[in-house]
Amino acid sequence: MNTSISITDLTKRYRRGGDRPALNGVSLTVDGGMTALLGANGAGKTTLMRICVGVLRPDGGRVVVGGHDLGTAAGRRAVKRILGYLPQELSMYDDLTGREFLDYIALLKGVDDKRVRRDQIEQMLELTGLSEHAGRRLGGYSGGMKRRLGIAQALLAEPELIVVDEPTAGLDPSERMRFRSLLAGLGGARRTVVLSTHILDDAAQTCPNTIVLHQGRVAYQGSTAGLAAVAEGRTYLLPPGAQAPPEAVVVNAAAEVEGTRYRVISARPPIGGTLMTPTLEDGYAALLQLGEPSPTGPRP
Ligand SMILES: Nc1ncnc2c1ncn2[C@@H]1O[C@H](COP(=O)(O)OP(=O)(O)OP(=O)(O)O)[C@@H](O)[C@H]1O
Image: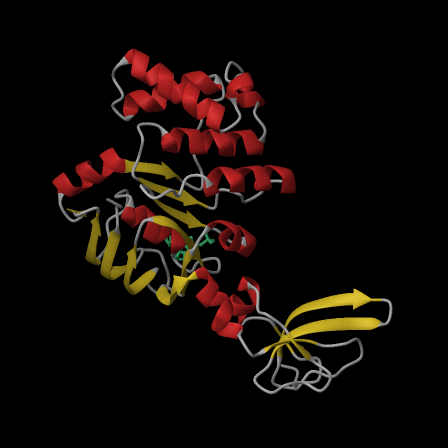
């Protein structure tokens, strides 16, 4: 059975967090498979994930993970046993080798049997493409290798729930693609994976479901295709030189020899505009009303 997460009316305000609470009445359900967690900087993603993995306590509301209530000590202990967590910043000891680091984490996770531990570690090194680097000290690892080791440690002890916070931030395109295919392989039927990211392409490629947080509230919860469809019938590509209606929002501007070609979200069809199938980026922009004002619209 899948480990679902059920969140009801969650609130969290940091003591030095300014006027707005970090989470303001968040209610949602996460089922098995992969779910993307999207939102601008400061939307509340990390706060929500830290509460769901039991390292931060909310001010109010309830979180139940796989039937375990995180409001109780027994619930938190139970969730720890089924959880793999990759935080935004994972402390690693530069003097340890990759294999030693995983051994240390596996011990912390309670994998006491030496042979079981060794088998799991070699399996994770293989899965993350780190076997040949396992004897090297972490001080010599690249950012991408550290991120992959981060996933390897999260996967130790066969977690049913995996929570990863912005795993591809700062990676070069080839490492990102590698990491993305690694993530895509995780969300099988028996697992629940929550992936927080700013990279919409990562969500589009790997996650069937998406949650969007906006200023501490849920702005969208549903299928990733459904989020793209928010801009359905409103996404147009304009030929170079064409005017966008003043109320249109520009989601992309491509400089071409003949002039700039705008991609816009517009309720009214622009003259000469071609109606496009919206991407996730279009849907996200339409949902949160992001983008630049139309070049023909009023300037702020
Ligand atoms: N330790 C803290 N003390 C005070 N305020 C905090 C703290 N951590 C987060 N905040 C504030 O809470 C809000 C939500 O932050 P959070 O880190 O959860 O957002 P986020 O969506 O993960 O952002 P990012 O994408 O930049 O990582 C922000 O306004 C942030 O400034």
